Length: 85
Image (spheres, rainbow, N blue to C red):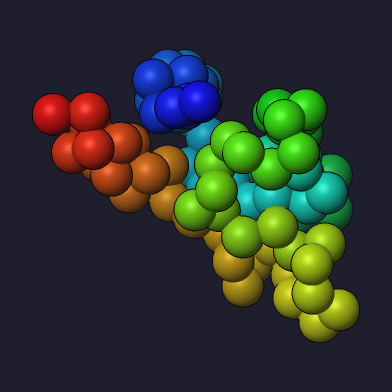
C-alpha cells in the first residue's frame, strides 16, 4: 500500500503547527525539540514501520539519538510532492 498521500497530509498538518523536525522511536513519529526530553509523540505507526520509511527509527540502534537522525519536515514534504507528481 502507498502511504505517500497520508504522509504528505500529516507533514503539512504538523508544519502548520510549527513542527520543524521529526524522528522515529519504536514506530512512533516524534517531534524533535532541540534536546528537550519531552519530545511530543505525533503519530503511532501501527503498520509495523510501513509509514515514513525514510525516517530512521532510533530503536534499531544502541547509540543513536533523535538529534542525530532528525529529519526536516520541509525536506520530507518536498520529497513526497516530487514523488506524487
